[in-house]
Length: 203
Ligand SMILES: Nc1nc2c(ncn2[C@@H]2O[C@H](COP(=O)(O)OP(=O)(O)O)[C@@H](O)[C@H]2O)c(=O)[nH]1
Ligand SMILES: Nc1ncnc2c1ncn2[C@@H]1O[C@H](COP(=O)(O)OP(=O)(O)O)[C@@H](O)[C@H]1O
Image (cartoon, rainbow, N blue to C red; front, top):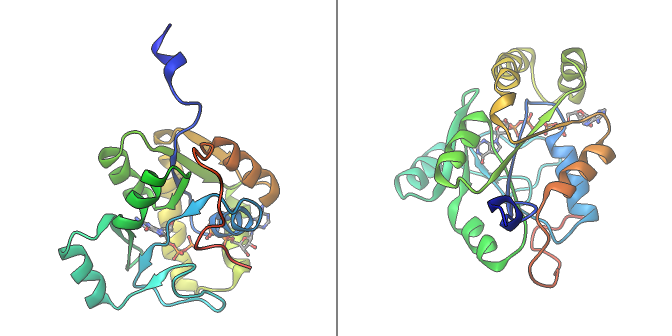
């Protein structure tokens, strides 16, 4: 038998990346609603909450000093400075969930995805791509959560992210949230124990 035949059909740890405004949050929200057995890491950030974002659900919103203390304490699996704010994945909950056998999804920007690739080579990296550049600009602008300067910084980062798509194991084009979600779920590993409602189920 070849090595490939022994490989699991899907990785248990999935990193979801993609430019600002592509639809990562929308896809994660639909997964939470439809597939409660999928566990999402809740990142920490120094960015201010958007209307409707709930501390502990969408992000852990940290003061900068708190975030820096967490870096110093080795609390993050990875962290990065994205467009002037810090973002990081708390290490302990991810390790705990992986040990418990449920598929884990964590979101990270390109820098974070690269760090995970090195720290956890068994992880699969998934890139969520827009149908076109124009549509990405439309989505990011249409969301109405950032001012013009912030949008410009995010679009500059998006150019770099789109150029790095080949570093990822899979690309999903987010034409519709339903289709992109179904494609992402098909890449996640099956739970190795009975599914239970998870702690970050919303709604
Ligand atoms: N490295 C890293 N990046 C993250 C993490 N959580 C979110 N991000 C990324 O930070 C960037 C900005 O996120 P956010 O401010 O929520 O904006 P959005 O992508 O437009 O919704 C995006 O590329 C996210 O994927 C994390 O834990 N680590
Ligand atoms: N497939 C899609 N078609 C049309 N609009 C979308 C789609 N996916 C997301 N959107 C919209 O685009 C905007 C950005 O989506 P969001 O999930 O916040 O992106 P991200 O988390 O990647 O920044 C939101 O207004 C969202 O409703």
